[in-house]
Image (tube, rainbow, N blue to C red; front, side):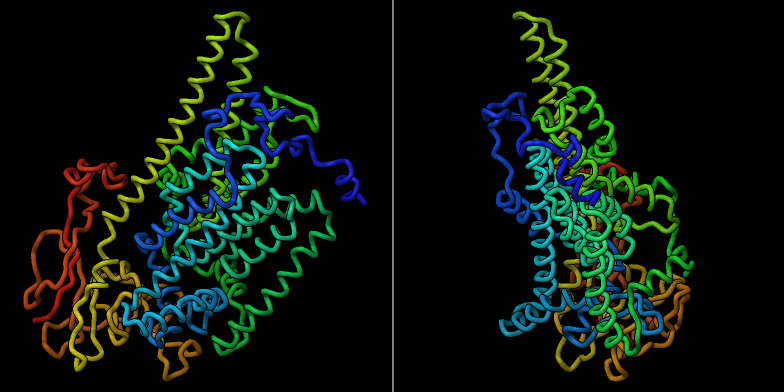
Length: 587
């Protein structure tokens, strides 16, 4: 009853807004927009056409930023597709922390792509890029939907959102990452768009998918959309919207996990139990509360502080511009604040957790940029309103008012331009500085067929291995030599003993090293290493080995902080120090 009364009375006064609030009923612009009406309106189609190009570039050039992406997702996927691959303790049936439903969605792309690549005699890495392209298209679709819904409330905010999303270094990294937090990002973005569109059943289903298929801790981002659904639809419908997809996905996910792990289990419940019950995620490193702010400043630059100010700017806009319910005086910033709310909520929550990873904030990345665009647009609206109210009458007043509005508009354009430029610069710096491993493993020599299996050894650079998809043949094996690292390392799946159902010895949740995870390095012709991948920062070569491939690799320790973080043409190359990322072949 209460829900129906709320619907009959209409939403709050913040919610009542025209699709283009900068135009009056006659279609004429009341307040000068950015470039007035010279820029095209944002629609799903034109937003998608811009964003999909950016995401395809990411699919082709983005590096693998996190070894968890390699060993918890790319390697198990390679095993499912080709029958060989590495796994961590999280895939052991003893612990069963990783979802095979999530892997299965990617298998549906990777397997046909691998079959096609084999039929056409294409490199095996084509399946890797096919998966990334699919991820990029999904991300672009979700982002474009959000842009289109924001445009119905504030066209300027949507224009800024499209531009900064296309050039964002954070989105460049997250959109095509094979990580549950990236999948959760797609779902949360869809939930934000659906919530703005009033499609609360879709928003709830997207949030459930984020938690049960992707990453359960993305649930922190689902809270605002659940509250919004309760506010507008009531308890009964909200419960139905949540429980129906929850029951369906849980049943499917648990059935697949139980089949793949060989015992009755559900990965999502296991990972919650491990983290919430103090399983020891701190073993893999802890950071201070300022970690995420520093990281977000690197990946989103000016968008981070401006976005954090959005609720206050929206309040200032409401107080300055005012307006009655149903008037078209102002955009519905209350709706945008509620859609954007998962960002500050996630930032506060994850900043308090001891173990921190850059990817934990991925689900909120599009909302950071949503808040950025809306804050700039609302701030411009406040300045325009103040200029109109405070400027004196007459010619001088008109000149002063127009000057203030022009200056404010130029300032907004400048902030957006600098943010986009810093985003592109950061993305290029990452690829140029740390992209060598992606190319090196594709260029390992193709040894004769009688050398099988081929041992490709790594020491201290083990965590930069991109995937077995990058090897030229399926019989190439990554092997680990002792490099002083005292933690646990991945081990191969053993197909003859049950594959995903078999728990290899030595895997443990204590990050404890096991000698069975390493091979003894030897220069002997019959040693375990036919090839070796390493980085040389001093220019020296390895005795009894010849260099088969090398590429420049950033020496971060000896490079200035700014030029290693952001690429500046010509200047960065002259300021930074580089080593050589090498593939060695035994003589």
